[in-house]
Image (cartoon, rainbow, N blue to C red; front, side):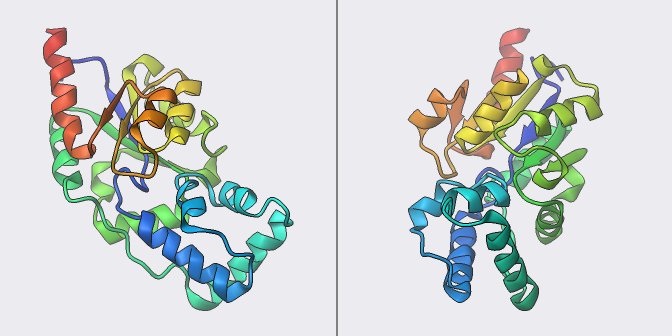
Length: 222
């Protein structure tokens, strides 16, 4: 492998997994069933990628966040919410295989809980591709740099040798705060202009474009 990066850190929802619609639908159903004040799909989509604590706090700033979490936790325990299975974007597995074959170390930094990510990795049979993963309930969540910094420490990687790949400005802010380059994909919830303003060095159509983009960088370095 040649080129500027050794470690590639992926976001999950909207970057690797086509989950925005399912997440919004599940949350809408939970809101209706628990009697929480209604919020629009646009308000919910805007926050995908953040930790559940931050999502609830931003959706209902007027309510006690502990009570909101307790109400939804009770609902989840009773009804098994969310009931959907994770689905990867069509080009993801081929891209992960190509990146692994090229010698990159692959990791995940996600706003999901450990329980949620483990379930998603099992649903998609994707666990084997990742050397290490970190979740929002194991560190300070996005946009704080802690998830990335944890991964750098645990893989003994310098910030200059790592790349974050995500679909939201929260991913870009997280990477920038950790001193790491970030590439955005347009498959998620934030648009190209917003991602560029947040610090993306490139905006690709999807993760499927990443191997060729990285190969181009490697070729330019030769």
